[in-house]
Length: 289
Image (tube, rainbow, N blue to C red; front, side, top):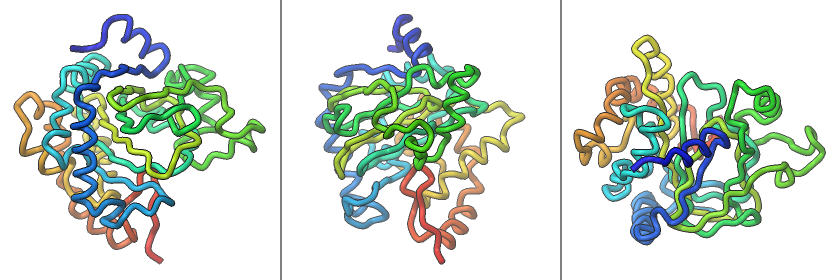
């Protein structure tokens, strides 16, 4: 089950698509599994209770639970990845979050050599005024002059000053709010400009990320990509449950990163010397003084 031609055309043109109620029947099981992972990890960031002041994040996330790991085998999820990217594309990881407050405009991966997409599950009802995902349609087309100009003032950082650039608050930047309910699936190109505004202090959301498979000549770039896991204090490309429960079909999406993650233990040791806690996502982490 992949996207229809019309759905694919919508995604390619605007950079995102929502599948309303695609996981409505599974929503409660997904939410229960989400909460189980958090409970197993102390309830909040880095084994501490969520403090309702800063984002709490766990990565990899779905990899720690058998039911959630199996989501990447789902016909819609795997089908979307296979069609938008390629049949042997890489599952690149996941993150589970309790979001707090606003997230400013940014792209996750604007000019990456390899295309990447993100699939998001919001586990609470969210609207344009309560923290739903907002996107600037078409801003994922990095060869477009408009998208490039937008990227110049809204790069990867989540601390952009919209008022200094445009004279408006970030929530007033022209955009499309993707309001959603538990059970909806949101898919977007990681190059698209996105943000959220007006949300509460424990917004539950997790993502599943995919990228094109790297060519042999770009193995070093692949290893650099995998190196980012060290900031989350993890020494493998994936969690143990994700690996141990993988079918042969799932392993196609894991094999390339697993074959190139041997540098992570050393990077993790170095990260723990420099960081007071694992990253909270979005490049957010505190270094030891």
